[in-house]
Length: 357
Image (cartoon, rainbow, N blue to C red; front, side):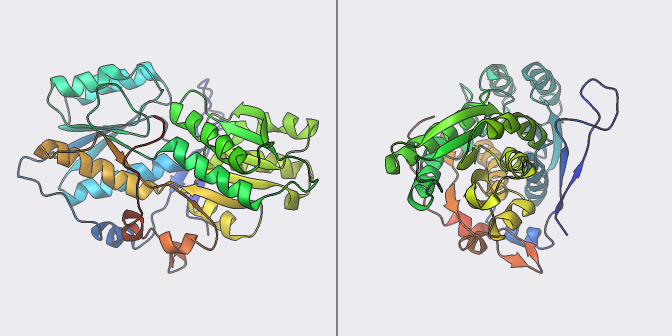
């Protein structure tokens, strides 16, 4: 049984017809998750450490953020803290309003920005109230601490893996479909890094279409269908798991040969993605981003800021190309369930700085 299920939210127009372009992923934690979390030491804190942490998430429908929400709650509980979550649903205005409310209710904040720009006021709100604030994924001017991968570098490494291991069935240069999210700079950097890494091995490979999947499997499936109808595609690159799966479904629904397409994605976040990777099908490789570890580092980060510890502006999270053979090192199956080995993730080498931010 999958450990993520999908529940369809009400439509955006409020009709409540049960259909949406953004189906809600549901994360079911593995039974030994708390043991995995205790394997990572806590930050030493005093009695005044934050007891109520606010998490301003950009879009909670995604499996990545369902995992972050759950792990943030569990990690905070290890410090004796509770968590209040507010979902911006990709609206900058909504996220700013939610922040105004939350800063009066909490004593620490974690922020996943709803867009690349326009959230600087939230950082200022935290500073004005002397509330420690950690940003996840997407840098915001004025922040003291960002928890994120090096998106360009991870994309470059993934592109190099594809360049080294994948050839076009026809013998012509690789044709790549880019399923991106251009409103968020980290996602743009992943695409740029991927094509640069790929072309460092196969110079004639190219993106033949670039689409905005909006982080939605449904939207990605719909938008990619005309591309597959118009030309052959060798590689689907996706900035996340769900848009990659949507594009792949569009490809297979058109009755194309699944053995001639390669899927390369970012994330490997949920159990479904890990099952696909190990099934021997089109998903050959993924840039593992370890959301469980990201969540831990976010909570630990607000505790470090509260205690006045010296912290790096960017807490770099490792992100590496992972294949079916490598996956069990970081996500062994415990009782038949993919379970994070957070000690193995924490032991991965990390960059001192990123090539691009």
